[in-house]
Length: 444
Image (tube, rainbow, N blue to C red; front, side, top):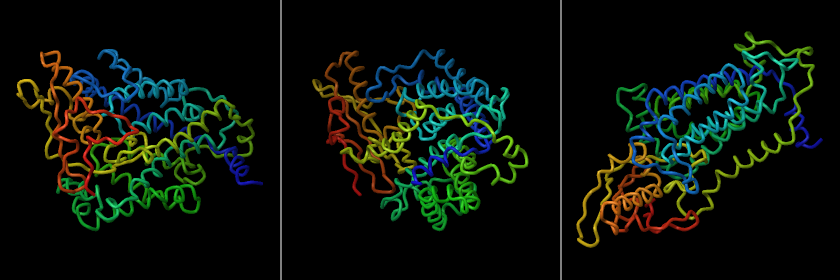
Protein backbone atom coordinates (compact mmCIF):
# COMPACT_ATOMS: atom_id res chain seq x y z
CA UNK A 1 0.00 0.00 0.00
CA UNK A 2 1.39 3.39 -0.98
CA UNK A 3 1.82 6.23 1.50
CA UNK A 4 -0.92 8.14 -0.33
CA UNK A 5 -3.39 5.29 0.16
CA UNK A 6 -2.38 5.00 3.81
CA UNK A 7 -2.95 8.71 4.25
CA UNK A 8 -6.36 8.52 2.55
CA UNK A 9 -7.39 5.63 4.79
CA UNK A 10 -6.15 7.52 7.85
CA UNK A 11 -8.24 10.55 6.88
CA UNK A 12 -11.30 8.30 6.54
CA UNK A 13 -10.96 6.71 9.98
CA UNK A 14 -13.76 7.50 12.48
CA UNK A 15 -12.85 9.74 15.41
CA UNK A 16 -14.84 11.21 18.27
CA UNK A 17 -16.77 14.15 16.83
CA UNK A 18 -16.99 15.93 20.17
CA UNK A 19 -13.50 17.38 19.53
CA UNK A 20 -14.67 19.47 16.57
CA UNK A 21 -17.95 20.18 18.35
CA UNK A 22 -16.04 21.61 21.30
CA UNK A 23 -13.81 23.65 19.00
CA UNK A 24 -16.92 25.02 17.27
CA UNK A 25 -18.33 26.20 20.58
CA UNK A 26 -15.04 27.86 21.59
CA UNK A 27 -14.64 29.46 18.15
CA UNK A 28 -18.22 30.74 18.24
CA UNK A 29 -17.72 32.27 21.68
CA UNK A 30 -14.53 34.00 20.60
CA UNK A 31 -16.21 35.37 17.47
CA UNK A 32 -19.15 36.58 19.54
CA UNK A 33 -16.73 38.47 21.78
CA UNK A 34 -14.79 39.84 18.81
CA UNK A 35 -17.80 41.22 16.95
CA UNK A 36 -19.38 42.57 20.14
CA UNK A 37 -16.09 44.36 20.78
CA UNK A 38 -16.26 45.95 17.31
CA UNK A 39 -19.72 47.25 18.12
CA UNK A 40 -18.77 48.43 21.61
CA UNK A 41 -15.62 50.26 20.47
CA UNK A 42 -17.27 51.96 17.50
CA UNK A 43 -15.37 50.30 14.68
CA UNK A 44 -17.70 51.66 11.99
CA UNK A 45 -17.19 55.24 13.10
CA UNK A 46 -13.43 54.80 13.55
CA UNK A 47 -12.82 53.30 10.10
CA UNK A 48 -15.69 54.34 7.85
CA UNK A 49 -17.05 57.63 9.17
CA UNK A 50 -14.20 59.62 10.71
CA UNK A 51 -11.56 58.99 7.98
CA UNK A 52 -12.02 60.98 4.79
CA UNK A 53 -10.91 58.03 2.68
CA UNK A 54 -10.24 54.31 2.74
CA UNK A 55 -7.40 52.37 1.15
CA UNK A 56 -8.85 49.59 -1.03
CA UNK A 57 -6.83 46.69 -2.41
CA UNK A 58 -5.66 46.93 -6.00
CA UNK A 59 -8.42 45.52 -8.20
CA UNK A 60 -11.03 45.91 -5.45
CA UNK A 61 -11.58 49.66 -5.75
CA UNK A 62 -15.19 48.87 -6.67
CA UNK A 63 -15.77 47.44 -3.19
CA UNK A 64 -17.20 50.40 -1.27
CA UNK A 65 -18.30 50.79 2.36
CA UNK A 66 -22.04 50.82 2.89
CA UNK A 67 -23.57 53.77 4.79
CA UNK A 68 -22.70 53.68 8.49
CA UNK A 69 -26.11 52.36 9.67
CA UNK A 70 -25.90 49.53 7.14
CA UNK A 71 -22.34 48.64 8.22
CA UNK A 72 -23.50 48.56 11.83
CA UNK A 73 -26.29 46.25 10.68
CA UNK A 74 -23.70 43.99 9.04
CA UNK A 75 -21.91 43.70 12.38
CA UNK A 76 -25.16 42.78 14.12
CA UNK A 77 -25.84 40.09 11.51
CA UNK A 78 -22.32 38.77 12.12
CA UNK A 79 -23.02 38.76 15.85
CA UNK A 80 -26.15 36.66 15.29
CA UNK A 81 -24.16 34.29 13.07
CA UNK A 82 -21.54 33.92 15.81
CA UNK A 83 -24.32 33.02 18.27
CA UNK A 84 -25.72 30.44 15.87
CA UNK A 85 -22.27 28.92 15.32
CA UNK A 86 -21.79 28.68 19.09
CA UNK A 87 -25.06 26.84 19.62
CA UNK A 88 -24.83 24.75 16.44
CA UNK A 89 -27.99 26.14 14.88
CA UNK A 90 -27.95 26.57 11.09
CA UNK A 91 -24.20 26.32 11.61
CA UNK A 92 -23.08 25.64 8.06
CA UNK A 93 -24.87 28.60 6.50
CA UNK A 94 -24.23 30.84 9.50
CA UNK A 95 -20.49 30.14 9.26
CA UNK A 96 -20.47 30.88 5.53
CA UNK A 97 -22.44 34.10 5.91
CA UNK A 98 -20.20 35.11 8.81
CA UNK A 99 -17.11 34.53 6.66
CA UNK A 100 -18.48 36.46 3.67
CA UNK A 101 -19.52 39.48 5.76
CA UNK A 102 -16.25 39.46 7.72
CA UNK A 103 -14.32 39.28 4.45
CA UNK A 104 -16.32 42.21 3.06
CA UNK A 105 -15.46 44.39 6.09
CA UNK A 106 -11.89 43.14 6.03
CA UNK A 107 -11.28 44.10 2.39
CA UNK A 108 -12.64 47.66 2.61
CA UNK A 109 -9.35 49.07 3.83
CA UNK A 110 -5.79 47.69 3.71
CA UNK A 111 -5.08 49.01 7.18
CA UNK A 112 -7.65 46.57 8.57
CA UNK A 113 -5.51 43.63 7.52
CA UNK A 114 -4.51 41.37 10.36
CA UNK A 115 -3.31 37.79 10.23
CA UNK A 116 -5.63 36.66 12.99
CA UNK A 117 -8.73 38.15 11.32
CA UNK A 118 -7.76 36.32 8.13
CA UNK A 119 -7.51 33.12 10.18
CA UNK A 120 -10.95 33.69 11.73
CA UNK A 121 -12.49 33.95 8.27
CA UNK A 122 -10.79 30.79 7.01
CA UNK A 123 -11.73 28.73 10.06
CA UNK A 124 -15.36 29.78 9.65
CA UNK A 125 -15.26 28.59 6.04
CA UNK A 126 -13.73 25.23 6.97
CA UNK A 127 -16.15 24.67 9.86
CA UNK A 128 -19.02 24.97 7.41
CA UNK A 129 -17.82 21.75 5.71
CA UNK A 130 -17.84 19.70 8.92
CA UNK A 131 -20.43 18.01 11.09
CA UNK A 132 -19.34 20.08 14.09
CA UNK A 133 -22.95 21.19 14.55
CA UNK A 134 -23.92 17.62 15.48
CA UNK A 135 -22.14 17.82 18.84
CA UNK A 136 -22.68 20.09 21.86
CA UNK A 137 -25.49 21.62 19.85
CA UNK A 138 -29.05 22.72 20.49
CA UNK A 139 -30.12 21.00 17.30
CA UNK A 140 -31.11 17.34 17.21
CA UNK A 141 -28.27 15.15 16.06
CA UNK A 142 -28.90 13.43 12.73
CA UNK A 143 -25.80 11.25 12.76
CA UNK A 144 -26.50 7.75 14.11
CA UNK A 145 -23.28 7.73 16.17
CA UNK A 146 -20.72 10.10 17.67
CA UNK A 147 -17.93 9.75 15.14
CA UNK A 148 -16.90 11.74 12.09
CA UNK A 149 -14.19 11.00 9.52
CA UNK A 150 -10.79 12.26 10.61
CA UNK A 151 -10.46 14.65 7.66
CA UNK A 152 -12.96 17.03 9.27
CA UNK A 153 -10.66 17.58 12.25
CA UNK A 154 -7.46 17.34 10.23
CA UNK A 155 -8.30 20.17 7.83
CA UNK A 156 -8.93 22.57 10.73
CA UNK A 157 -5.62 21.54 12.31
CA UNK A 158 -3.86 21.89 8.93
CA UNK A 159 -5.12 25.46 8.57
CA UNK A 160 -3.74 26.39 11.98
CA UNK A 161 -0.48 24.63 11.09
CA UNK A 162 -0.10 26.98 8.11
CA UNK A 163 0.23 29.83 10.59
CA UNK A 164 3.08 28.08 12.41
CA UNK A 165 4.83 27.00 9.21
CA UNK A 166 4.91 30.36 7.46
CA UNK A 167 5.68 32.16 10.73
CA UNK A 168 8.84 30.06 10.94
CA UNK A 169 9.88 31.06 7.41
CA UNK A 170 9.85 34.77 8.27
CA UNK A 171 12.26 34.06 11.11
CA UNK A 172 14.89 32.53 8.83
CA UNK A 173 16.88 35.71 8.34
CA UNK A 174 19.71 37.73 9.85
CA UNK A 175 17.50 40.24 11.64
CA UNK A 176 15.93 37.46 13.72
CA UNK A 177 19.00 35.34 14.44
CA UNK A 178 21.77 37.95 14.73
CA UNK A 179 20.11 41.27 15.53
CA UNK A 180 17.33 39.49 17.44
CA UNK A 181 14.86 41.90 15.92
CA UNK A 182 12.06 42.81 16.17
CA UNK A 183 12.04 41.01 19.54
CA UNK A 184 14.61 43.38 21.04
CA UNK A 185 12.70 46.53 20.04
CA UNK A 186 9.43 45.07 21.30
CA UNK A 187 11.12 44.14 24.58
CA UNK A 188 12.53 47.65 25.02
CA UNK A 189 9.11 49.18 24.40
CA UNK A 190 7.44 47.11 27.11
CA UNK A 191 6.60 48.93 30.36
CA UNK A 192 9.12 48.27 33.11
CA UNK A 193 6.41 47.34 35.59
CA UNK A 194 4.60 44.95 33.24
CA UNK A 195 4.01 41.23 33.75
CA UNK A 196 7.42 39.48 33.89
CA UNK A 197 8.97 42.64 32.42
CA UNK A 198 12.31 42.00 34.13
CA UNK A 199 12.55 38.66 32.31
CA UNK A 200 11.39 39.87 28.89
CA UNK A 201 13.78 42.82 29.03
CA UNK A 202 16.77 40.66 29.98
CA UNK A 203 19.14 39.11 27.46
CA UNK A 204 17.98 35.68 28.64
CA UNK A 205 14.37 36.63 27.98
CA UNK A 206 15.16 38.01 24.53
CA UNK A 207 17.12 34.89 23.58
CA UNK A 208 14.31 32.69 24.86
CA UNK A 209 11.74 34.51 22.73
CA UNK A 210 14.00 34.42 19.67
CA UNK A 211 15.12 30.80 19.73
CA UNK A 212 12.14 29.16 21.42
CA UNK A 213 9.75 31.16 19.24
CA UNK A 214 11.42 29.88 16.08
CA UNK A 215 11.71 26.31 17.37
CA UNK A 216 8.03 26.02 18.23
CA UNK A 217 6.94 27.44 14.87
CA UNK A 218 9.39 25.38 12.80
CA UNK A 219 8.93 22.07 14.61
CA UNK A 220 5.17 22.46 15.14
CA UNK A 221 4.25 19.70 12.63
CA UNK A 222 6.48 17.21 14.44
CA UNK A 223 5.59 18.34 17.95
CA UNK A 224 1.82 18.47 17.45
CA UNK A 225 1.15 15.67 14.95
CA UNK A 226 3.59 13.09 16.31
CA UNK A 227 1.61 11.29 18.98
CA UNK A 228 4.42 10.49 21.48
CA UNK A 229 5.47 14.16 21.62
CA UNK A 230 2.27 16.19 21.51
CA UNK A 231 1.13 15.49 25.07
CA UNK A 232 4.35 17.19 26.23
CA UNK A 233 4.40 19.85 23.52
CA UNK A 234 1.05 21.29 24.60
CA UNK A 235 2.72 22.89 27.65
CA UNK A 236 5.35 25.02 25.82
CA UNK A 237 2.82 25.92 23.11
CA UNK A 238 0.29 27.10 25.68
CA UNK A 239 2.96 29.14 27.50
CA UNK A 240 4.17 30.54 24.18
CA UNK A 241 0.73 31.81 23.21
CA UNK A 242 0.02 33.13 26.67
CA UNK A 243 3.31 35.04 26.63
CA UNK A 244 2.38 36.55 23.27
CA UNK A 245 -0.87 37.78 24.77
CA UNK A 246 1.11 39.65 27.42
CA UNK A 247 3.83 40.99 25.11
CA UNK A 248 1.81 42.17 22.12
CA UNK A 249 -0.98 44.62 22.71
CA UNK A 250 -2.53 44.42 19.25
CA UNK A 251 -3.33 40.73 18.79
CA UNK A 252 -6.47 40.53 20.93
CA UNK A 253 -7.98 37.07 21.26
CA UNK A 254 -5.63 35.47 18.72
CA UNK A 255 -3.25 33.75 21.19
CA UNK A 256 -6.18 32.38 23.19
CA UNK A 257 -7.82 30.95 20.07
CA UNK A 258 -4.48 29.37 19.14
CA UNK A 259 -4.34 27.80 22.60
CA UNK A 260 -7.84 26.44 22.14
CA UNK A 261 -6.91 25.12 18.68
CA UNK A 262 -4.33 22.80 20.26
CA UNK A 263 -7.17 20.33 20.92
CA UNK A 264 -7.44 19.83 17.16
CA UNK A 265 -4.20 17.82 17.24
CA UNK A 266 -5.51 15.31 19.78
CA UNK A 267 -8.03 12.54 19.90
CA UNK A 268 -10.53 12.61 22.75
CA UNK A 269 -8.97 9.54 24.37
CA UNK A 270 -5.66 11.44 24.76
CA UNK A 271 -7.21 14.23 26.82
CA UNK A 272 -8.02 12.92 30.31
CA UNK A 273 -9.97 16.00 31.36
CA UNK A 274 -12.23 15.91 28.32
CA UNK A 275 -12.79 12.17 28.11
CA UNK A 276 -14.40 12.31 31.54
CA UNK A 277 -17.08 14.66 30.30
CA UNK A 278 -17.84 13.36 26.81
CA UNK A 279 -19.03 9.98 25.52
CA UNK A 280 -16.40 7.48 24.50
CA UNK A 281 -16.24 5.91 21.07
CA UNK A 282 -17.47 2.31 21.16
CA UNK A 283 -18.14 -0.27 18.50
CA UNK A 284 -21.83 0.50 18.78
CA UNK A 285 -21.68 4.26 18.32
CA UNK A 286 -19.03 3.95 15.60
CA UNK A 287 -21.22 1.77 13.44
CA UNK A 288 -22.47 4.44 11.09
CA UNK A 289 -22.22 5.17 7.44
CA UNK A 290 -19.43 7.70 7.49
CA UNK A 291 -20.27 10.92 5.64
CA UNK A 292 -18.50 10.45 2.32
CA UNK A 293 -16.89 13.62 1.09
CA UNK A 294 -18.59 14.78 -2.08
CA UNK A 295 -16.67 15.48 -5.28
CA UNK A 296 -17.43 19.20 -5.14
CA UNK A 297 -16.37 19.44 -1.51
CA UNK A 298 -13.22 17.43 -2.18
CA UNK A 299 -12.37 19.58 -5.19
CA UNK A 300 -12.91 22.77 -3.20
CA UNK A 301 -10.76 21.61 -0.28
CA UNK A 302 -7.92 20.42 -2.52
CA UNK A 303 -7.91 23.75 -4.37
CA UNK A 304 -8.21 25.58 -1.05
CA UNK A 305 -5.12 24.00 0.50
CA UNK A 306 -3.07 24.28 -2.69
CA UNK A 307 -3.86 28.00 -2.56
CA UNK A 308 -2.94 28.17 1.14
CA UNK A 309 0.44 26.59 0.44
CA UNK A 310 1.35 28.53 -2.71
CA UNK A 311 -0.19 31.99 -2.39
CA UNK A 312 1.89 32.99 0.67
CA UNK A 313 5.04 32.38 -1.41
CA UNK A 314 4.14 34.83 -4.18
CA UNK A 315 6.14 37.65 -2.62
CA UNK A 316 9.38 35.70 -3.09
CA UNK A 317 8.99 36.10 -6.86
CA UNK A 318 8.14 39.81 -6.93
CA UNK A 319 10.86 42.42 -7.53
CA UNK A 320 10.36 44.59 -4.45
CA UNK A 321 11.66 43.72 -0.98
CA UNK A 322 8.90 41.52 0.45
CA UNK A 323 8.94 42.62 4.05
CA UNK A 324 10.18 46.16 3.58
CA UNK A 325 7.42 47.13 1.12
CA UNK A 326 4.86 44.48 2.25
CA UNK A 327 4.08 43.86 -1.42
CA UNK A 328 3.16 40.18 -1.30
CA UNK A 329 3.22 40.19 2.50
CA UNK A 330 -0.50 40.16 3.29
CA UNK A 331 -2.39 36.85 3.41
CA UNK A 332 0.97 35.12 3.90
CA UNK A 333 1.19 34.58 7.68
CA UNK A 334 4.34 36.69 7.96
CA UNK A 335 3.69 37.37 11.63
CA UNK A 336 5.52 40.22 13.40
CA UNK A 337 8.08 40.54 10.61
CA UNK A 338 9.70 43.71 11.92
CA UNK A 339 9.33 46.77 14.13
CA UNK A 340 9.45 50.36 12.88
CA UNK A 341 9.90 53.44 15.02
CA UNK A 342 8.82 56.61 13.24
CA UNK A 343 10.92 59.76 13.56
CA UNK A 344 9.32 61.90 10.84
CA UNK A 345 5.91 61.71 9.19
CA UNK A 346 4.53 64.57 7.14
CA UNK A 347 2.95 65.36 3.80
CA UNK A 348 3.71 68.61 1.95
CA UNK A 349 1.35 70.21 -0.57
CA UNK A 350 3.12 72.49 -3.07
CA UNK A 351 1.77 74.85 -5.72
CA UNK A 352 4.30 74.59 -8.59
CA UNK A 353 3.10 77.91 -10.04
CA UNK A 354 3.62 80.12 -6.99
CA UNK A 355 6.15 77.90 -5.29
CA UNK A 356 4.16 78.08 -2.05
CA UNK A 357 3.98 74.96 0.05
CA UNK A 358 2.52 73.88 3.38
CA UNK A 359 2.27 70.86 5.63
CA UNK A 360 -0.97 68.91 5.44
CA UNK A 361 -2.93 68.22 8.61
CA UNK A 362 -3.39 64.56 7.77
CA UNK A 363 -4.67 63.61 11.22
CA UNK A 364 -8.02 65.12 10.38
CA UNK A 365 -8.24 62.94 7.28
CA UNK A 366 -7.12 59.44 8.32
CA UNK A 367 -7.02 57.49 11.57
CA UNK A 368 -4.02 56.25 13.56
CA UNK A 369 -4.28 52.69 12.24
CA UNK A 370 -4.10 53.97 8.66
CA UNK A 371 -1.15 56.20 9.57
CA UNK A 372 0.67 53.25 11.13
CA UNK A 373 -0.05 51.09 8.08
CA UNK A 374 1.64 53.67 5.84
CA UNK A 375 4.92 52.96 7.61
CA UNK A 376 4.76 49.51 6.05
CA UNK A 377 3.06 50.03 2.71
CA UNK A 378 4.33 52.61 0.19
CA UNK A 379 1.26 51.97 -1.96
CA UNK A 380 -0.86 53.58 0.74
CA UNK A 381 1.42 56.63 0.73
CA UNK A 382 0.90 56.89 -3.02
CA UNK A 383 -2.89 56.45 -2.69
CA UNK A 384 -3.07 59.14 -0.01
CA UNK A 385 -1.00 61.50 -2.16
CA UNK A 386 -3.37 60.94 -5.10
CA UNK A 387 -6.33 61.76 -2.88
CA UNK A 388 -4.66 64.94 -1.61
CA UNK A 389 -3.91 65.92 -5.21
CA UNK A 390 -7.58 65.46 -6.11
CA UNK A 391 -8.66 67.57 -3.16
CA UNK A 392 -6.20 70.24 -4.26
CA UNK A 393 -7.80 70.29 -7.70
CA UNK A 394 -11.22 70.79 -6.13
CA UNK A 395 -9.84 73.76 -4.21
CA UNK A 396 -8.24 75.64 -7.07
CA UNK A 397 -4.86 73.86 -7.22
CA UNK A 398 -5.20 71.50 -10.20
CA UNK A 399 -1.43 71.06 -10.53
CA UNK A 400 -0.69 70.59 -6.83
CA UNK A 401 2.30 68.43 -5.99
CA UNK A 402 2.43 66.16 -2.96
CA UNK A 403 5.63 65.19 -1.18
CA UNK A 404 5.97 62.64 1.63
CA UNK A 405 8.64 62.85 4.31
CA UNK A 406 8.40 59.56 6.16
CA UNK A 407 11.38 58.39 8.13
CA UNK A 408 11.62 55.46 10.51
CA UNK A 409 14.06 53.09 12.16
CA UNK A 410 13.74 49.52 10.92
CA UNK A 411 14.59 46.90 13.53
CA UNK A 412 16.87 49.23 15.46
CA UNK A 413 18.80 50.57 12.45
CA UNK A 414 19.50 54.29 12.02
CA UNK A 415 16.40 56.16 10.79
CA UNK A 416 16.03 56.54 7.02
CA UNK A 417 13.41 57.79 4.61
CA UNK A 418 10.93 55.26 3.25
CA UNK A 419 10.12 56.99 -0.04
CA UNK A 420 11.96 59.63 -2.05
CA UNK A 421 10.97 62.91 -0.38
CA UNK A 422 11.90 64.84 -3.54
CA UNK A 423 9.45 63.02 -5.81
CA UNK A 424 5.84 64.04 -6.32
CA UNK A 425 3.97 61.07 -4.86
CA UNK A 426 0.86 61.94 -6.86
CA UNK A 427 2.72 61.18 -10.08
CA UNK A 428 4.75 58.08 -9.26
CA UNK A 429 3.71 54.81 -10.90
CA UNK A 430 3.05 51.43 -9.39
CA UNK A 431 3.07 47.86 -10.58
CA UNK A 432 3.66 44.85 -8.35
CA UNK A 433 5.81 43.40 -11.12
CA UNK A 434 8.18 46.37 -11.43
CA UNK A 435 10.85 47.71 -9.11
CA UNK A 436 9.59 50.87 -7.41
CA UNK A 437 12.32 53.46 -7.93
CA UNK A 438 10.58 55.89 -5.58
CA UNK A 439 10.92 53.53 -2.61
CA UNK A 440 14.33 53.96 -1.00
CA UNK A 441 16.24 50.75 -0.37
CA UNK A 442 16.71 49.79 3.25
CA UNK A 443 20.32 49.66 4.38
CA UNK A 444 20.92 46.18 5.84
